[in-house]
Image 1 (cartoon, helix red, strand yellow):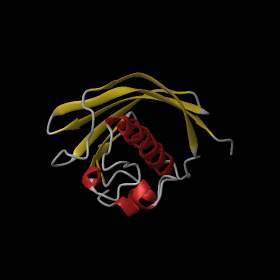
Image 2 (cartoon, one colour):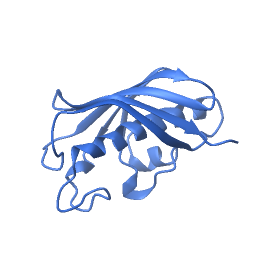
Image 3 (cartoon, rainbow, N blue to C red):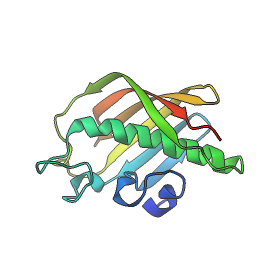
Length: 143
């Protein structure tokens, strides 16, 4: 999957708020993605001329959403929208990301699928250097 538009078809995030541009690979348990949009001066999460590392949590949550969308599509379904309800063990290793040349890559791995909720761990890297990691929980909206 090589375009933001293809990814946006799987998740509720649209336009520039769809943060991922490329799915590198995925399977039933995990996903890897890539994005260059963190350098865009019109990035929707940017403020005071900066994109702070805290926003990597949104990148991690959207990685979960893309994975859920791909799993649903593979099953002939449409993924239910979810609500991020918890972040745990988040470690940020940089203060900002808008000044990083090159792509950001993410890995997200499903830890728990309870039917109406998911828990994942995520890690985001830039040129092989860990930027952020943590765990996230999402509650899915009822059908």
